[in-house]
Image (cartoon, rainbow, N blue to C red):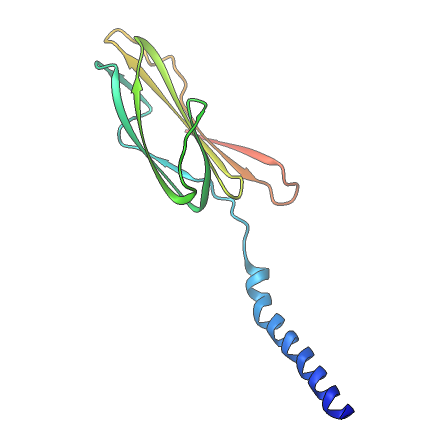
Length: 151
């Protein structure tokens, strides 16, 4: 009876060990998500002048991870966490220069900010405005955030 008990215990240890060996490569090779979500729209461009103060804009947010936070002009948007999110937003622009700032954050903490400069009226000079996209990525070693800017 002692021999069969020792064999059972040995078999259990072997089974657990074999399971760990099978799962370990996937665990070790899993990479941390450092890609910022994408912000897509065809309704706004970086700099544009409008004649009508009202405009409905569709934004599509895409990421390989769940999107957890979306801010449009500092206002948090309601949505179900997903890897693809569609938001339609109605804007009422004031005469002169208007800024639309969109920020999206994924589950891993990566974020992207896109800024659009919208002029209302024909006499608005948009050349003096600076508009850029910013992408925040996690530094794996120090867990600090690095700011990458692209134009």
